[in-house]
Length: 286
Image 1 (cartoon, rainbow, N blue to C red):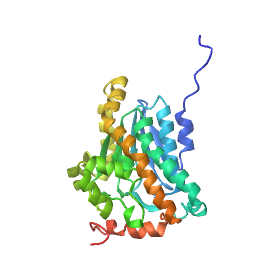
Image 2 (image 1 turned 60 degrees about the vertical axis):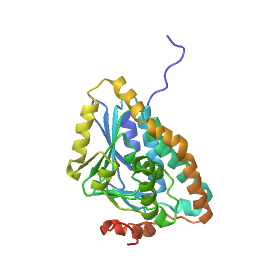
Image 3 (image 1 turned 45 degrees about the vertical axis):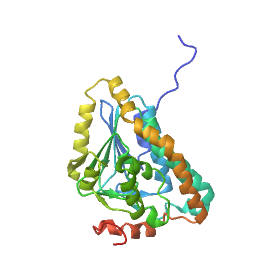
């Protein structure tokens, strides 16, 4: 018998309670886990707090060997279209500290954990229009609700689009399309996202989770070792992209962020910037 014991791994019932204010977690007996991000039960409203919670949740899920597949999505009829009105007070109070803690460190962990800390297949469900879509676009398989719109708002709010969304767009769209989307805030409809290769399927919103489970059932039909090792193969392009580009991109964005010495995440600023998406326009200037 070994002289030492294993350190206990995370227990689902415990971390489901810990993360309940940020994610509704449900797990089937076969280890298929559904994580629905939310703010007060509705669509995600960006804040320092939920930005950090995402990376923490992904690391914990990855450390629990009873999890076999992750389905990740948002809540309600939008993915993320607003900012928590008071969600960036900490950043305003101490910009140098939180520009590192919230943005550079937490942001890198979010994207890196999705690719590196989860050794199980992932299915992203884009449940409605929103920004910061990289967290579902960089899942192994991604489905989109048929009325959803993918876009990036960083440039239009005076920020450098280099906190993971650049990885997703450049890898999936290619150089020219990514440059156009990042510089113009192009509103990419679900059908165009399918044509571009951003997503794998477009389905009605009310069928999105059911379709995610259907695909999960197929993935789960093969042995555990096959599932996990296949995941390592299909993620190789993302791993390379993150190694080559993620830290440098974040560093460039944070230099610009701190140089401004003011937050660009205010609720009113973001809300007015995304109006063109709700209005069905292609971008914010035509």
